[in-house]
Image 1 (cartoon, one colour):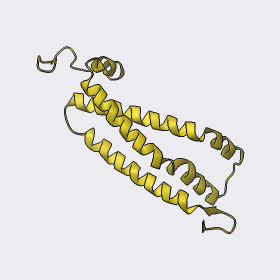
Image 2: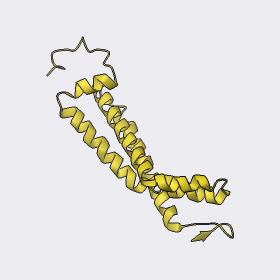
Image 3: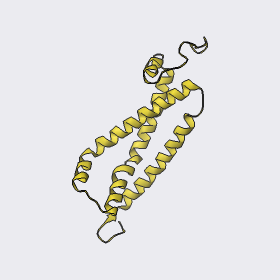
Length: 142
């Protein structure tokens, strides 16, 4: 344990998991930036819908994992600065080491499901309207 204050300390394992989780988050964010800024409108729309689904799933998974611990943290407010930092590393950044690969797999799976499923345009039209729905060329309909 690394001791910053006499009575408060941050576990080195939680700190290392938090650092690796932040690195995975940066890698995923750069992946999302590159895939959502290339291709035509339809490819971008599929990627953005996949990213949103992955992010929502990751947030729900994190809330499910830590809902009982968060109740105990709220009961112990106000926190010292070191306890607040420890709480941030433990409940926000350390779980990213598990959640980011899950989000990445969900994003890729959803994108390829939307890409090859013939009814996916109906689903995407409910989420994100296609401005050129009536003006598609015959090649786009194939």
